[in-house]
Amino acid sequence: MIAAIYARKSSPQKDADAEAKSVARQIDNAKAFARGKGWTVLDEYVFSDDDVSGGEVKKLRSRQRLLDLILRGQPPFQALVIRDESRFSRRDGDESFGELKRIAKAGVQVWFYQDGQPFKFGDLHSNVIGLFKGEIAAEYRRQCGRLTNEALVRKFKDGYVTGGRVFGYDNVRVNGHTERRINEAEAVVIRTIFKLYASGWGYTRIAKHLNAEGVPTPKPAHGRPAGWYHRTIGLALERELYRGIVTYGRQQSKAADGTRIDAFRPREQWLIAERPDLQIVTPAQWNAAHTRKAAAREQFSSPDGNTPGRRRDSDSRYFLSGFARCATCGGAVGVVRGAYTCLRNHLRGSLNGCASTTRVKVTTVDDAVRDKLKHLLVPATIMLAVERAQKALASSSVSKDLKRHRAELAAVNQKLANLSKAIEAGGNLEVLVKRLQDRRSDSERLQATILTLETVDVSDLRGLSRKDLQKRLDHWHRLLSAVMEDSRAALRRLLDGPLVMTPDGRRRYRFNGQLALGQVIAGEGESPSNLPASSVRSIAWSLKFDGIAA
Image 1 (spheres, rainbow, N blue to C red):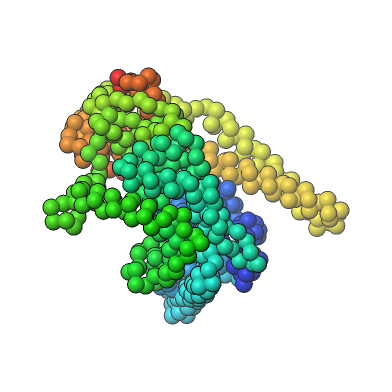
Image 2: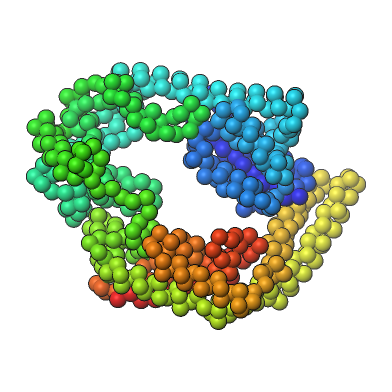
């Protein structure tokens, strides 16, 4: 029996017990519980979310991957081990209870190792207890939220920092609390932004100028390079703290069920305080910049003066927008003045952005990619790729490895039986127990390896006739030549990962990607659910391609 594990920890809380503070400890205890039941836990089925509230369902990414595996049908494990109900969710009682019911109905047993009991439903006692436990967990979240808000309001009224660090200031620890102090080197950059914008410079031009000058930059988001870009310039111009106005409560970040909504409150509900000691720009500098912003807003508004005149469509009008990535920096490739180019270079320049300055006309790149895909989507190419995938999956080495690992597992199991008898006979307990634990680890490792190899089976591949395949490929050709909405929808299904654009001079791109063979064969509107889905198979079931757009 295969078991999965889920562990979660919220932000550090003084009144939480030690175990709830440690995701690693929860995982270790869950594994021990599973071993006691005789279950196998594979590393790929251990899921955890660290420092995330149980009500923030959109941020619980590992939890969502776990639910996707279970609810899409035929989950690869039969049990799920969790510390208790609150680790899985702190949403309202009916919602958290309903989520656990969905898992149980999908055929996965849910066990709570803290009390050693399984999740139950379907009778009065189980339903009432389950709803009650869920509501207790949700009330704990609500109570923590109220206490946190009260503490932050007190800090604000006392003039202390209630959030994180803001560019232009240093957070200084004073007598057990945090205060802001102006960082003069960063304050000079903020004054420069206001001055340049008021003089007529745009966001992108300012960002490129600052990056070229090598001035200090805000701390980048995780995984992104440091630098100025158009959005950070706009945010700086709107931050009232720079004119000495401190606010609290601008956003209502939590809904009643604990999910994040980030809705702005009316200004009359904010807490506002004047702090001349934190003023970086003068009233004259602030007013000059915002007078220009108001004029620009009026210039680009619609005739009725209410809605913006230029609005981005829900889906792009360019074929590759959202699908193409720059090989130099990994950032998005988008359209600027009728040409595909690296947006990170366009918005930040070469110093803090990306060195790629390649620009190729939209029609040139679109035509090259369409032609390459149509050239691949022919029966001869697809049938050859399928045959190669089948040979890779059915190679003799797989069966040999499977046979060898099964023999090793049988030998390890025999050693386990002998060690158990030796322990019962009263041998050197310490040494025997250590050997027993080592052999159990070997057994679990071999079982996991065997399970992976057993999934490599070509018996479920879809039978293909050349005539049927030709019809499907003709349909993909029509979609790729159709209106932009349909051709982008086809591209979204056909690509297995992003299209990588490698600069090759100023007016030339080399591109490469992978065609999702499973989707090609399944056809539009069908799901390749009976095609290989494991990581071993997905490698064999993609067709690499490359081309040139010049």
